[in-house]
Image (cartoon, rainbow, N blue to C red; front, side, top):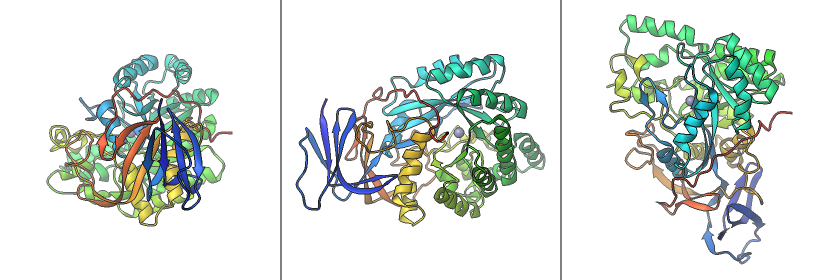
Amino acid sequence: MSSILISGGTVVTAAGTQDADVLVDGEKIAAVLPREPGAAVAAAADRIIDATGKYVLPGGIDVHTHMEMPFGGTFSADTFETGTRAAAWGGTTTIIDFAVQAKGTSLLATLDKWHAKADGNCSIDYGFHMIVSDVNDTTLKEMDACIAAGVNSFKMFMAYPGVFYATDGEILLAMQQAARSGATVMMHAENGIAIDQLVAQALAAGRTDPVNHGLTRPPELEAEATSRAITLAKVANCPLYIVHMSASQALEAVAEARDGGQNVFAETCPQYLFLSLDDLARPEFEGSKFVCSPPLRPKEHQNSLWRGLRTNDLSVVSTDHCPFCFKDQKELGRGDFSKIPNGMPGVEHRMDLLHAGVAAGRLTLSRWVEVSSTTPARMFGLYPRKGVIAAGSDADIVIYDPQARQTLSAATHHMNVDYSAYEGLEITGQVVTTLSRGRAVIDDGQYQGTAGHGAFLARGPNQYLL
Ligand SMILES: [Zn+2]
């Protein structure tokens, strides 16, 4: 086991900033050593990393990714190997991915299947949520076994009838079971029954371009489903976490529930903060690159989401990373927007895009770390092992250069997908080094990691619950 001293940097945590050196011993942080201006290096180590002028951050935690996920006859383009490597390039040291129960199969067999995909292939640590798409007596009983296996959060869908969709009754049953077991239910909140009617009407009228994906999923149907999920969670007394919130009306419903004291939480994603319906309307089928659900919204929603991040009505920023190549995958929906695979690449640039928000005066430095690392760790039962720079925590550390300039592009990114949703966007700030449990994964512009270094994280319950 070797020791590393990260010297001269500014340690940024959810609690604030501090001029301090960080001593890593093996896989753990051994000490955070406050530094007097001009003082000499305070500890000996096998390796000293000069972090002068850089931020020293707890590694990012992306709680919403879909590596090699089956969708409409194809698979998302990143494997656990390529996706976790790209994550590390962008300063993310933990992902929580979704195991997807197919109808008629068991939750535990599903979990085994996802372990088989991920185990031995990840360069950073990982955990799973479980997507419950088939609610029955067996499944409900299996939820406890999932919790015992380290999967403490269950995702359900009010969208995608015939695939993942659950009725209100099924949702209520699963919420009651989760409540009894101290688990959190995560919700894709869009009214899929109504959306399917709007989609059928658009196609019948010959409106087949990608922009119609957005127009047939209006914000009101996200708000309605969000409110309904909140009501069901209240009746079941179950903690609720709304995934990928995109609409200001839905955010209002969450804010009201939180003001009322209910255990309701929500995340948003960079694409909803930076992109809009205008991107879905790009010509030449280019809009298909921006098809995800809920859809990108008119620009005015962005301000509400940034404000929600400041007020903590939005607690987390994840990516919903679910990449499909433009060629051969997105193209499946030429002439019928409803056949475009839903999802966008993003796992690599979450920290950078949020740092752009810091540079633009939309978030404080501490809030940047909080929404991208500390709160995700607490929300999903990983704190203080993850999400903080403190003695005893895993040495998941990012050294970040806040002055570096970079241009996001498919030509330079590391995700296994043939386009960037942010092609040509210039931003300030870039990862220099990423450590995962004391091991350099990204070091001075080089990938130094290995598939299989990443370990499965058995998670405990949501730490915001009383
Ligand atoms: Zn998702």
